[in-house]
Length: 353
Ligand SMILES: *Cc1c(COP(=O)(O)O)cnc(C)c1O
Image (cartoon, rainbow, N blue to C red; front, side):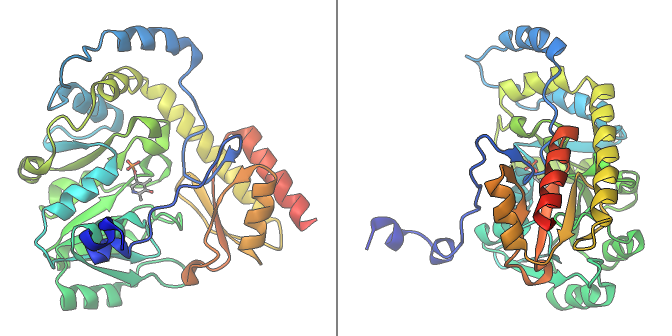
């Protein structure tokens, strides 16, 4: 027996590692990244700005300027508090750490897989309430499960990854009101969505919002934020590791995220492309395309595994859910730039001949 196998918690040994597929030289439509790079005319001043970062020093611990930058990028009301994370995944982990061993984390199935993984890392129980056939919240069974398990944390991906829909707002209001949990509305896709709970945070002491810049062009910076009332943010901040936002990320965010118009116009290009993809794919009789308020589309096909392999062999990487019962024969494709989307459409059309 290897040393690590006798040393490591058995539940961790049994976890399947989060798999990131190889994507060199492929059209990468698997991870909801933005296709847009930093504009070329900004590269030089950006590099000059970066060169002024004092890398011999620890980063600014509170990253206040980054907070301000994000507040103006996302129009966050000034009475709310903001907590920064090294990606929003780190903030999910931070909230899990705040729970007691054996507390319950509740979310939905299918939804973002990190809720369950992180709950398990932190030795918490995880309950995934099944969404209905339209991937909508089943309010009755959710309220039953809340009553039965008294969850400490509830994660609601809004819009939901990987289905793309934004759940019924009234259901979410009811869940927030009917539970004693801290309810985390995860708005990773806020830039592509018609709606938000940002203006509700001040109305509910048990509501916090999770956002990230990963889906709007800056996945490489690793920067996410938790938005909540000041008291909640102040207490949770005790669990944050000092200096969790590195100096290069802080400098990059402060320079690049000031380009609000550019970020907003890129998002609107993606929304237009999403509509174009949706229309073209919906016109194909072999496919069922689900409406999306995010920068990806969930598509039900006859044989997801075979289509996934075909696309991969032709240089396009998407996400396949061939094995998931609720998503059987579904693929999820990120909306790319016009030429990437054209290539995807062309390959799909040639596959269905
Ligand atoms: C992508 C995604 C995240 C992770 O964001 P990072 O900030 O890159 O860690 C969180 N929640 C949902 C629902 C996502 O789809």
